[in-house]
Image (cartoon, rainbow over all chains, first blue to last red; front, side, top):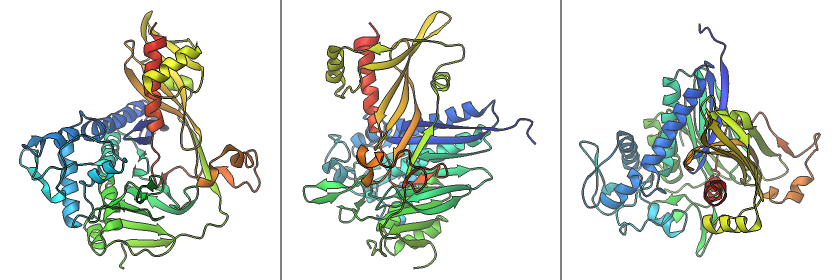
Length: 287
Length: 179
């Protein structure tokens, strides 16, 4: 048994374009340094993989990897590897190359990069953590990098000796420790209401819904969720939550469930994941 | 459909309660302690801005200056300047968020901490009048601050207003505080 009586701390910082909340229980003497280490890990992911920061590794890839292979950090390579795997398994229902559509809609900032013409198949991962684009691409690791950041923060908490904790990056969250955490799923048609409750034990949960990003565009409504094959916006009052062992996988699989049709079941099974679809009526999810 | 995708049909939009949060992450003292090393001393140094200063900050930062008073503490360690600690408010989705910006002695950002986060949700809760009818009500109130709801997974709220707040406060430092 530990000789201290544990305490808990809850902190929140604006990171990854959202509010990141970290709750930890553990040894009072070490708890503040555990929280700092967790936020440091998230800041590191932001520095490497931010779409909005022209100096990030991701931005450098987008500028240069169509011309020659670019060597990246181990963390960036891990996320790109997962992105490529899930894109392949879902036949592009998850596709990290739809950014040009979001840029055209004004949802992502313009980067002045080459005209991107390729898709996820053109992302080549080579030996020695080198990355090359077969055709010009504009990669955006937004959601999957956010999930990875949550995983890194949880690993940092664990390494710092936290007993239990929860990291929540704007709805992408992961619990660690012996207990169960209760998580509410927001009603996508009326975000003031909680529509469903889930329990998490050493697991992650991520949600995709157009609730707050939906807006009117010149040719109909837009949102940050793009159906990769047609590049159409998802604007239905639907939300998809995925519970998975890691938050990186959970976030990417929300798109597989939204857009993967019949393939979604198999990809969820491959990752030991489950999905919760909230909608007013059974949806014919895009095939 | 087999067992891995659970379809949950939402109830129709009749009645129902609207939830809000109020989470306090930090008091002024605990935020100061989180931003600066032990042994740092803080001297209150609130600043009242002139109209000209407010205008200059807006022009420099491209962000509107809403209040003419800025809560500021000067940080020092062993008699040497250690930086600045500024408490500010920005609008979240519907409610104000209190946050702190810590600056190093050279004016660069040391850290950012959210102190108080309040949020209500629901498109119906757009204006203050609508909300005011529920404030102070207990029994039967439709809007409640719910302590049971700690973790929510759902659509993401952007922290863009804090990013704008950082720009505004860096202009405030450059044009006012450092002189």
